[in-house]
Length: 503
Ligand code: GAP
Image (cartoon, rainbow, N blue to C red; front, top):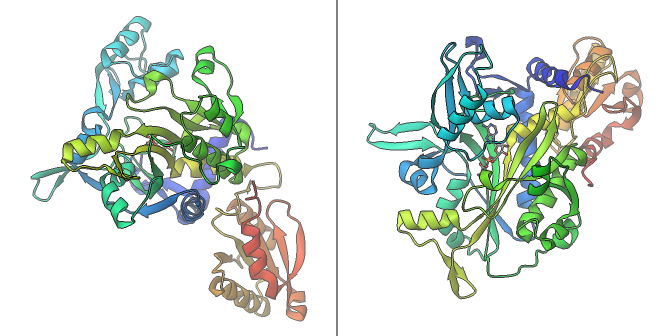
């Protein structure tokens, strides 16, 4: 149990601050809305998450080749003009005439009136505000200054003669590099390109700690394929049997529930537009289940036509149930050939490639993962109270920042030096395990600290260790203790990291 849902978010944020998962940027100057830093534990957890994602979606992918790139964060005006971001990447806003607070208009209306207004023009939104007398939730003041708010951060490069932007998504580097990658790697369709990195959006109202940020990280894949061929995907036979939950457009209109369907059948029945997209939806369900998100807390929402970009063949947001409601953590889109077409046109470079002797512009399926939202989702799903006298962070073992804590039972020279020897061997050993050494305070306090930080195992060095070279190994989740030989510790901790991944 983790207390009342509304308390959970507060507890998680407090724990994150206390234990060094995340905190506002420039906190000593009262921070800056929408910017957060990851602390020592958060940075380790992120590195582990990214590594696990790369393992799952890049390194272990055998259905098609996936190439990883690392592109520039700053992109020139022309590239983002072509992609449509310069002209269309904006949210509607309004200002309170009394307190001056700026609000994101669509969210304000949706939350205040409980109606969806995605895709409506600024004039239509203004009319809804007028008819329903929607006011500033902060002070009740009248709304004014209705306009579109551009979401990109603009930069003056060099002496200011060149305009550029901080990239609003990592995806664009992939499209811009598409032809070079295809030639350099002698790539054959279908193939994918992945990237992990920072994206920037000047959000009107950043909120919920690391959920809506102005600077965040994405893990994105663009999968390129020919729309003219009926592919069989090598691993689809296995992955396609996964049950996925889809909140269909029809169910959304009736206020209904998500349907449960095998990924394979979702394609057969025309709910998901192609096998590649279904393949990723199924892989995502497995990935997040292995990260401790139960299937009942995940659903794919098929975006309504008015929310879907005109070029898209279908968007399916993976939403997770948080303490504050359902929220997207992965955007899945069938972008067709939109990006390659617009970049071909604006750059004058023909981005079509050879597919079995025919020149084509490939179509694209894109899963786009938000790192901070995923970290937060995992933290909320791992936070437990009431199990012990202190909170326990039951993190998925593969992403927990620290794999083990090495603890001398008492702060005595003979125990401490033996513990230090074990700690050093684990850190420098073949598996290079990230373990911590702690000899401060009572053993009970140290167990509590380790539990709160989500440390998988506690290794205690006691007087018996000095006699027979065995230690106690305490499991974070059960608090059970077993005796193990020091020479077995490295493999024991390493294997323990992979527990729970067989979904
Ligand atoms: N290339 C497609 C794309 O960027 P998106 O749905 O706008 O799609 C993908 O973003 C994911 O990035 C989201 O599901 C979310 O996890 C994350 N994300 C988007 N905006 C964010 C923000 N302001 N703060 C934190 N994460 C964000």
